[in-house]
Image (tube, each protein chain N blue to C red):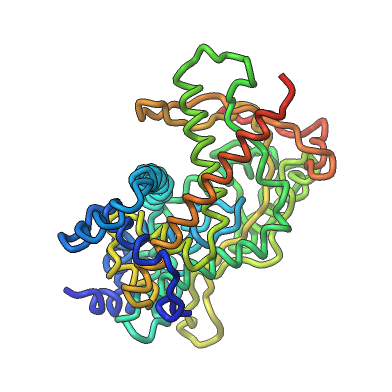
Length: 231
Length: 195
């Protein structure tokens, strides 16, 4: 659509006002505007209102722009990024993975530092009474089962996210690096909200938690659901 | 180095080139998202999606000179896709809200009260902006993005500068008329409400 093909009666007047409130009016624009204002003084009130609207719109757009300034590009996900770069960047975000490992050890009754020896590495088994964990896959399955029982795990996503793949040197297959996403649940009672004071200072204040209508609420936590996290 | 070189390098996997492109354009991309996003969608979430799409698809950009229109389309597609997904997620996102005092409670806190008023005014203006035709809304918002001239908006949208200027002028006039009508309606409803 080209608006110039369908001119409207007020276009020239609106464009002139626009140039004035944007501070871009030329001498000729001002001369033309003075003629308009001579016939219709209400144009000054119009300019004042438009300036106010413009300032408030800039505030809204600036707010979104400030949010944009906090978003970094996930360059490690570029199709041509080197695996080393991907792992390096993944390491930065690896805190959750460490937490998951600790949670895994806790869930299956092990403490961090206790040995888990996986038989798929061709070595001995780790005896944990009746709960013998022979492979990493079994340990993960145990974690998922216990997590589902206690309510801390919802389940595993049906598909993983492939980070990289390369052909094995003997040509017998591929080595694939991938992420297995697991959906977990925690109960968080202390919720905080970042707000800006009138003076522009950022404050952290407690946020009010609104109960959801019953149709949209999550299922109630089971009695054995994990305790709230101390964040 | 000109922008086309940067695009070629980013497409070849140079993370610094990609980051430079993103940092140069992300503020106006936020304005495009504001113009096209569904009401409840969060600009920050959409920016994450656009950032991901930029990284994963920049090597599909055939003409490096067309970077800006391409970024705009990536943003519009992200906003539209969120609109389609939104019905599924409805109800799950609004778990918390700021701990603002209820009417008559804690009103002595002038800072909070002023902040609430400002937020309310921004919300009202936001809903008026939503009523503008898409083509006007995007131009009006882009013009408010830091440093965006008619020429730059023209490069992003592919429209002539004169068209951009006309759309902004018409959009602003419509916005002023909408604000006037809304103020009038609010005044009437206040006058009618029981004391």
